[in-house]
Length: 285
Image (tube, rainbow, N blue to C red; front, side, top):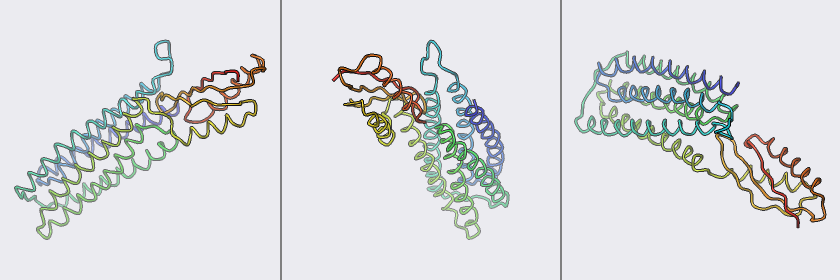
């Protein structure tokens, strides 16, 4: 419940912050004809969608397991993060071509101190949101929060370059504005692709990481009664995994004792943060 509430608050703060930034960036960007600022405004629009997806995806993922969803709704986090990544790639593609056209046509923009002020406000707001979501990401290991954290971080960097292009206009260097627009689009596309790949891997049932698998094997080997261990199978359910493994024990061990052994090992493995549930089969050897 705490994980759900914290992610919900992060989503709401992201929506409100990005709506504010979208409005002021759009107004100043269009009046000054700054391609970099317009690109930054479009980025804020995609951020609103991302924060909304975080809010909705988190609500669904927080639902407990039921008769039709025996292992909960955790994968909703990855479905909605997939939506976020696709929207980021779409926006990045449009911004890339718009910036190329602006660069070819050598369109100048009107310098305004409002451009500088908007950049500073954006960096302050986004850096604050970045620190907030970074703390929550480390605590809850939530891909929706991670996607938002990276988005806030990227915005700080992107807006800093936008500020540089604005200041360079003092020296009548306008081409850098189009270059920054291109850079922003590439950065958004790269981040979107990384989020897409991570979400895709989970939805395609990628196996648990090698480090956690080794930890599970070490736990199993700590039981002297276990003579042999078959390969571990794993399937993700949201941010956690279901572990299935087969152990071999002395054929003379009673069924009662072998099941007690399996139950004990299941509890030890399930206590690992990344493990949702453990299923162990016992065979005689």
